[in-house]
Image (cartoon, rainbow, N blue to C red):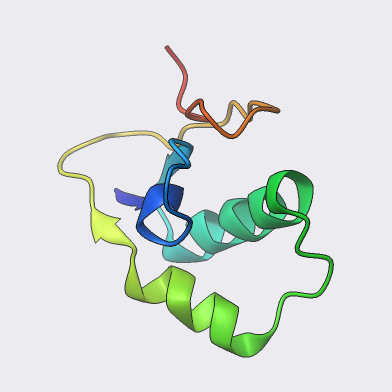
Length: 78
């Protein structure tokens, strides 16, 4: 299980995501950056910055699928 916390890239943002695959975490993070932080163009260096901040989330059997529309919440199912 991999996770990304947006606050590690955008100070003050509490949004985070978890998924089994790094590619899914990157996809969700890019969508979040577009929707909540106004990043209309995602350049390769931004993707590299996201990848550099992905960490192991410990044990987990399934990917989280819920996506919230606010930047202060997790997309992790409660």
